[in-house]
Amino acid sequence: MLARLPKQFDPNVLVGFDTADDAGVYLLSPELALVQTVDFFTPIVDDPHTFGQIAAANSLSDVYAMGGRPISALSIVGFPNTGRDVDILEAILQGGLAKMQEAGCTVIGGHSIGDDEIKFGYAVTGLVDPKRVLKNVGARPGDRLVLTKRLGTGVIATALKKGGAAKETVDAAILSMCTLNRTSMQSALPFEVHAATDVTGFGLLGHAREMAAGSKVSFVVDSTQIELLPQARELAQKGFLPGGLKRNVEFIGECVEFAPDIPEELRNLLFDPQTSGGLLFSVAPKDATQLVESLRAEGASAKLVGEVLEKTRPLIQVR
Image (tube, rainbow, N blue to C red):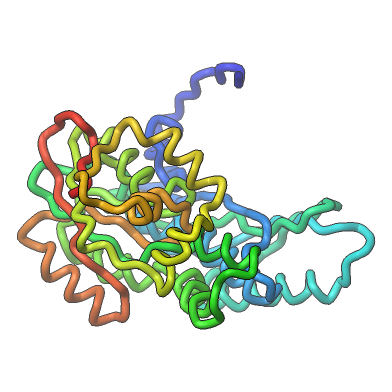
C-alpha cells in the first residue's frame, strides 16, 4: 500500500489531486494558466516512427482534454544500452517530433535512461484561459454524452502482437491513434460543454465512471450508438483481450449494470483500454446535436452515446 502523501495547499492550483483529471492546471494570472501532464508507455505497434507519433498524440491529448493549447514538451525515453539499433530510437524520436510539430508544440529537451524495455512519451505543458478550463467534473443531469473516436485500440493492439489482426484493421487503429484531439476540442469550445475527459487506459466506462462519480450524477450509455474500429468486435469475440481490460472490469465492473441483451464482446470493448483515444464530452442538451454535426464535419467519428441522470444506482447503466 502506498504511504499517504501530505496535503498540499497552493491557491494557484486550479486542478490538482482532488479530482481524477487528465492534467494539472496552475494559475499564472487572471487571464492565463498552465496545463501540465506526463505520459509514456511501451511500443504497441511494430514501426518505430509510428510508435513515436502515437506516443506524442497520446501525451498531447491530456492538454486538449482540459481545453488547453500545448506549447512545449520534454521527451521521456527508456532504451536498451546494448543490443538495439540506435536507428530505432532515432525513428521513434522523429515520429514524436513530427506529431509535436503538427500540434504546434515545441520539444525543448528531455531525459533518457538505459532500460531493457523501450519506453517513450512526453511531459507536455500547455496554456489555457482559467475561466474556460474543462474538468472531468461538472456534468449535469439532462446533459448528453458525446464521444469523438471509435473504440477498440487495446483489443486490436493485443491481436497485432499475437498475429491475429488484419492489415486494414491495424491501419485503421493507427490512423485513429495518430489523430490529434486538437480539432475536436476546438470544435467543442464554442458550445456549452460542462465536463470533458479523454478516453485512455481505463476504457470508456472507466473514464465515464470518473466523470459521473466526480460530478455526483449517473450516466446512461447507449450501446447501439458506440462505433467500433474495424474487426474490433470479431477480435474481442476471439479473446484478444488486453490485461488492462480485465483489470478495468475488476475495478469498475460493480459500478456498471448492463442490459441483458448486450453481448459479451461489446461489454468487453466498453472496458477496453484505449491509447490516444477520443474525447468524452458532457454537453448541454440544446448543443448536443450541433456539436456532433460540427465534430463530424471536421472528420471526427463523433456520436451521441448517452445521457446524464440525477445520481442513482447503478452509477452507469448500459442499454
